[in-house]
Image 1 (tube, one colour):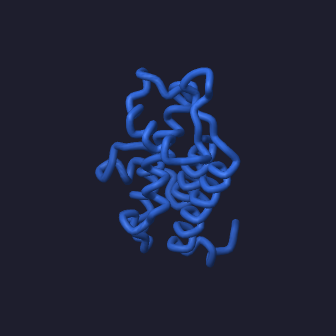
Image 2 (cartoon, one colour):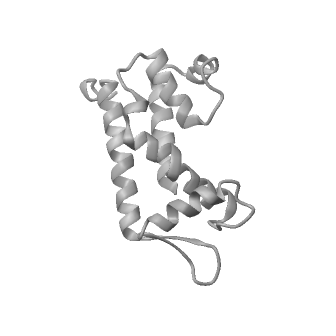
Image 3 (cartoon, helix red, strand yellow):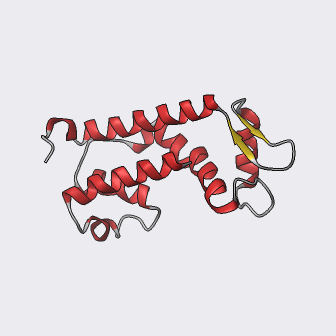
Length: 141
């Protein structure tokens, strides 16, 4: 799911525009992935008014979408015993008609409907973060 990487990159870019040393500024809050670091920087250091706990999009992105992305990126999309979060991801795939396992093995197949849903979720999340950071009010340089 390149979409996850795109979101991560876009938020990191927003942080970098505000402070080239933004990752150092957020180290005391979190040692996790870059996406979480970016959000912690924007919320805690830049004081944007945004609650991750109230965001259903954040929940999907950091939960199911992240597990799916990790399976694709680190396990060739195979939902087998090598994948650490196999059981959680298997339950998610089983509940989603737009996600299936290949008939020849354990490869996850992303359907068009899932891709459209994921794009909408990530787009809504990014837009809400940018609005909260008042980016939309600032002229582009």
